[in-house]
Length: 83
Image (spheres, one colour):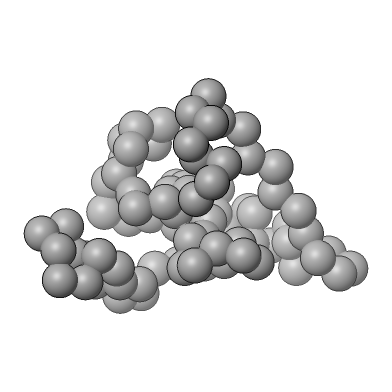
């Protein structure tokens, strides 16, 4: 995964486990995270960082879905709904 090209916060990370992209996401996904363990604090450009164990569970659970899966995201910042 990569992003923020040409900016000081550019990133490029290989071998991210259990990536599940949001359907209309512009590259935003749920995925396992091995580079930090401070879940619940902002460490992302929009993705939902999960422990590898939790991401594995969600990935396996989603494989049984028949059709699209929906993830409901709640936020206290109304601007987040526009991203």
